Length: 272
Image (tube, rainbow, N blue to C red; front, top):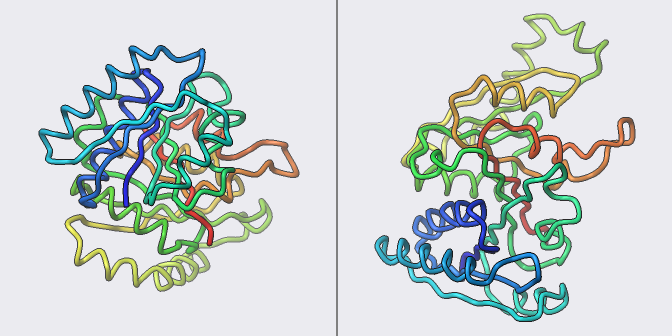
């Protein structure tokens, strides 16, 4: 099994590959540096990025290999990636207004590959090497084993403080009716349902705690919490957020990836 980092010759993509490298090292897996040729990317820059990441990986005793596909068609890319036993594919967002929609990253999520996809948005390059705290944002107590395993793997390799931010979404009327007693009851229920993950964290090299939020707008609540936090990395289970809202025609994951004030990973676990 391998970890894949999709490079395009930019500093952003190279920075993203540092997360892939740390993840691969933590899981004791080889790292495949991958690029599909196209007119937008400078091949010399791609090769230079691959050389730098490979050199760094060698110093950390992580095995690497590089692949550059001459055919950038989605069918060719899908066929190639489908033939690799892959754990996670790391890729980066674009810099302009729409970071995911219509991008290579979005294409990967739609290829039905037998691998998880981690789409990384880099806000602060200097915050990649050392991470003291990271956040996993979830809706209420909806935390899958896949999302927790990825979050725990990243937190373990950095030995960072971990936080689960559990957001309870309700209507404005329901929110106005929530008093301290009702809030405590709901918080207790969520903590109880997440207790198994808390138990597992005691066997891992990082601390973990739960924070709660009650809101009528999940996306805005997450952005506000991120801005107030000291975390250097936020991980978001992205699949359910990658659909346009019926009410405001907005794709929540796009807003989160555009406006988050720290480095963010949108995680798409493989659905089997």
